[in-house]
Image 1: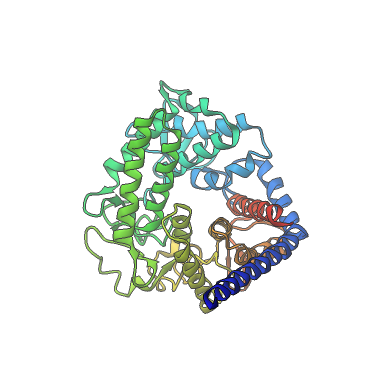
Image 2 (image 1 turned 45 degrees about the vertical axis):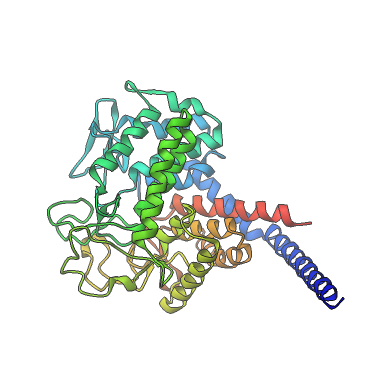
Length: 435
């Protein structure tokens, strides 16, 4: 009898907890749906995205890593065929070795680069590439999948681009990565010694292009992007055999990321692995540096459990408090030392640019993942600094310094895109939980 009474009491307690959670969810949903600042920022973001595919007011180039983060929202405000054409230019500029450029501009523009990328398949544009980074191919594959998922235009995969289908060109892009960027020891992709997801290395001769002075590394951002791209290819595969092949490759990357890059004891990702040995320039404890951006992308790639995501979010908030920076858009904490990165690329000082600046472009992606993992109250609270500064400044900026000081390019479309998507996810959850 006593056991029965205890069981009934426990069930009653669980029922009260569920009711309490439902009431809390309804209150949170009501707050989200009535929040006029979300409406205003969403409207501002969508208006900005009607103004072209370039990255921002300070960038007239179309960058694939940026485009990939605002393609879903821009498709709400411009015709799908225009988006498809912007994507197709990247395939026309694909190089004979399979690599994908960072971005492009019209050939007739005044833009100049030390290492231009040309293609006979496109006489109207010239491409460029910051070769210290390894996210161009994976960004394009992800963008194609987002375009197809949003438009339903699966015929794009079989579209002919200079004698090859789009799908075949994506296969060649992966072949390039596995041939030129794959480390046989760690079984992961490599890149230059950059700050987390950044495309500026610590080489004072040429800070955006790999050369004989570069240090080769393995990091979480590049490899999480690869996992997401392989998952996309699995979903775009023409048959079960191809899908199984992509899945096998994806699973291999997942296992090697967890084995080599995830620090199980500290519940965080390691900053860098060095296939050729740690360079003398890294004469400090780099493992103390917590990469926020790469971690957010790793969560998007489903590389962490729900419990680990909660721990990671707590750690990020602690880093924000310690750093004095405005939001979880903080790229990393602590930062790299003064003078570790070259002055000519804006990275000389801590908490500047990619070396500890606050980027909505990545913070907004963390908000999206918090919503996806059911941490909606946290997402709504943590997005507030990003929403408020857009309203105060009347614009979307590339990054922010201490005191929420806007820095870099205005009209930054990556920031607008990730915030609009985060707002949409918050609202969708609220609509589903308002009653």
